[in-house]
Length: 333
Length: 247
Ligand SMILES: Nc1ncnc2c1ncn2[C@@H]1O[C@H](COP(=O)(O)OP(=O)(O)OP(=O)(O)O)[C@@H](O)[C@H]1O
Ligand SMILES: [Mg+2]
Image 1 (tube, rainbow over the protein chains, first blue to last red):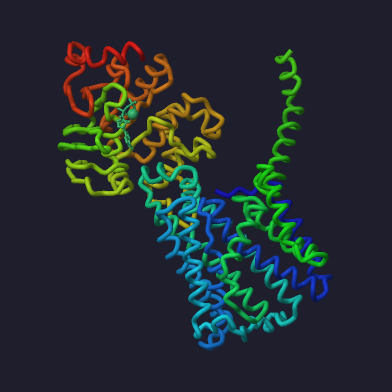
Image 2 (cartoon, each protein chain N blue to C red):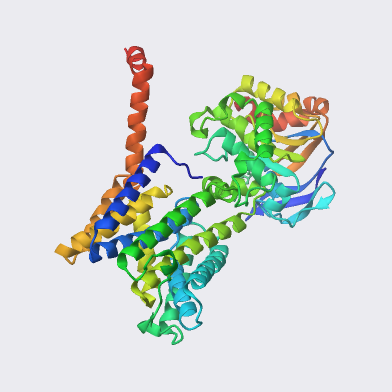
C-alpha cells in the first residue's frame, strides 16, 4: 500500500514547481530534456508498481513501452486512426500484453520471474526487428502528435509538448496512487509480504499479479505513445532489454516501492546523463559507480535514504520534545 | 464438517502420513497430539492443499475438496494458522486482519475502493480483535509487538476470514504454559459452531480445549477418542514419555 507522507508531498511539490519554472524558461534543448524526464518517469512509475510494490522485477517494461509506441504509430499512420483514440488503443494494447505476460510469469518467482520477463522482452524485440510490417530495424516514422489546438495548445512546439508530457506524468502518478490504494493494491502488498498467507486466505494470487501487471502495462504503453510522439519515429531499440534494465536502474536509484523515488531517480538519471556526456563518452561508467554506491550503502535508493534520515530526525525531535531522551539517559546511568 | 479418508504422503523414502482417517463434527474441538516429526504439520498442509496427497481424500462440509487449490478450499471455509508465524510483517495488526477479511469478503481485487476502509471489513477487524485480545494494539506494526501478540495475531488472521473450520498449528508454541492456558481460554470463548482442529505439543494443555483427541505417531493415527481415555492410556504415555519430559 502507498502512503503520502509530508516528505513525499513536499518532494512532489518541489519537483513540480521546478519542472514548471524550468519548462517556462528553458530553450529547445532544455525542453527536450524535460520531456525525456517526464516519459522516463511514467515508465518507472509503471515499473515501480510491479517491482517495488509487488516484488515482481520485470525486464519486460521496455518492451511494453515499445509496444505502446509501435501500437500508437501503426494505428495513427497505417490504420488512419486519429491520435487520441490511437493513444487509448495503444495503452489498451500495453495493458492486454502486460496482463498476458504477467499471467504467464506469475507462477515463477525471483530470478526465474526476471528471466521469464526477459525472454518475453527479447521475443518482442526480435519479432519487431525482423518483421517488415513493423519496418524491421529501420523502424517506422510519421507518428503524428496529438492535436490540442482546440485548447489553444500547440504540441508541435517543444514547450507545449513538454507541458503535455508533464501533465500526463501527473495523471499517471495519480492513477498509480489510486491503484495502489485500492483493494487490488492492498492485495499486491499482501502478496509481497506473504504470498503463501494470501493464498491460504483464499486469494487467487495469480489473478492479482496479472491484473497489476496489466495496469502497469497501460502506463508503460502511455510512456510509449509519448515517446513515439516526441521523436515522431519508432525503432526496435525502444524494445531492447537495455531499456528495461535502465528503467530498473532508475527505480532502484530512486527508491523501490516509494513511487516518488523513481520520479526523482528519472530526473536525476536524465540530467546526469546529459551533464556527464557533455564532458565524457563514459557516462555509463559514472552511472555505474553511483549505482554501486547506492546499493552498497544499503539505503533504498536516493529517496529511500532521505526518508530514513528524516524518520530518524523526527524520532529524535519527538523524543526530545517528550523528554524521552533524558529518561533514557537516566535509566542508562 | 471435515473428514479425511486414508490420507497418505511420502517424501521419497520417508512415509510421513499413513492412512490417516479423521472425522470432525460441526463445532467439534479436536486436538492432535504427537511427538516431533510425527507428521502433524504435513497433515495440515495436505488438508489445506499446500501439499498434494499421494492417496486418500478430503471432504469439507460434505464436498470432496481433494482436487481443489489452496485458495478454493479457503473460500469454501477452511482456514489455518501456522506453526511458524506467517504474517504481513511490514503492516499493522489492523491491516493484517483487514487483508484477511477483505479477501474473504471479495474486496481483494476491487479497483474502485480501498478494501480496508469498507465498513464490513472494519467491523470484522474489530470483532476479531476483541476475540483474540488485540484491540489495544490494532495500530501497532507487527514488527513492533511481542512474540506472544504475534501468536495471537496468527490465529486472528485465520479467524478473520470467518471460516467454518480452522486448523491451528501449535498456536501456543513458544509462549510458556501460563500464557498458553490464557490462549486456550480465548479459544474456548470462540463461537461454539466453529470447528477447530488444533495441533498441540503438550498433552496437559490439550485438555483445556479438547472435546476429542487424536494422536499421531510416525504418521499413523494411534489413538482417537475422548480426553479421559487419552489421559489413562498407557500406550500414549509410552509414546510420549521421551519428548514429554523434554518439553
Ligand atoms: N517438504 C518436505 N520434504 C521432505 N521431508 C519433509 C518435508 N516436510 C516434512 N518432512 C519430514 O516429514 C516428517 C514430519 O514432519 P512434520 O513437520 O509434519 O512433523 P510435525 O509432527 O509437525 O513435527 P513438529 O512437532 O516438530 O512440528 C519429518 O521427518 C520431516 O523432516
Ligand atoms: Mg509441525
